Length: 154
Ligand code: ATP
Ligand code: ATP
Image 1 (cartoon, rainbow, N blue to C red):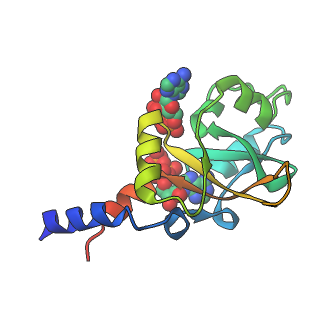
Image 2 (image 1 turned 30 degrees about the vertical axis):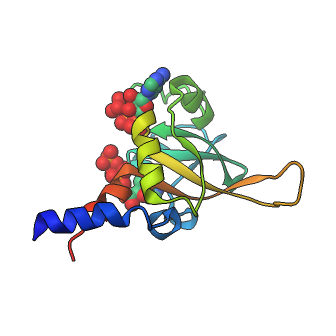
Image 3 (image 1 turned 135 degrees about the horizontal axis):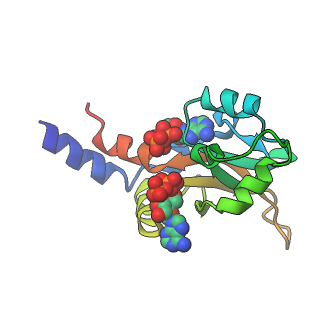
């Protein structure tokens, strides 16, 4: 029955990894930090239907922040003065960091909940042997992704 499925779902979170449920970077809708925010950009971004949009700089795997679609609501787009970076910096939306593909969903669920983050960026180290390893984003995960995993019915 339903309760039993939920219990099974919750228990399976411990063995399930983030890589199995994350949204791969290639499928993530993002904005570039230096894009000027005009009505056209806002309109097309709305078309994707997501509330939270990661912001990258130069390469897509270099995520530097997050904007919420509602952050654009009161913006003066006429002046053409504001970039995605300006909006990102002003609202300073927080998100989960240092989440790795091999982390368990259970662990990440607790982390996101504790810190009250809705979204986390999943990263990988580019070169493990280097003293200064570079970080690159490989995907995103939201509370929604994990909860869906928890309550899925067989
Ligand atoms: P909300 O329900 O708060 O409006 P949302 O619908 O934008 O949020 P979620 O409900 O958190 O997003 O997630 C739904 C699915 O969409 C998840 O699989 C999540 O990984 C994915 N998702 C969220 N934001 C993006 C994005 N910017 N690009 C691609 N996929 C996204
Ligand atoms: P809200 O919760 O206002 O609807 P949101 O859903 O857009 O905002 P999330 O994407 O869920 O926000 O992630 C931001 C979360 O971080 C929010 O739940 C917010 O309450 C929380 N938060 C923001 N700033 C702080 C802070 N300084 N200390 C603790 N929590 C914070």
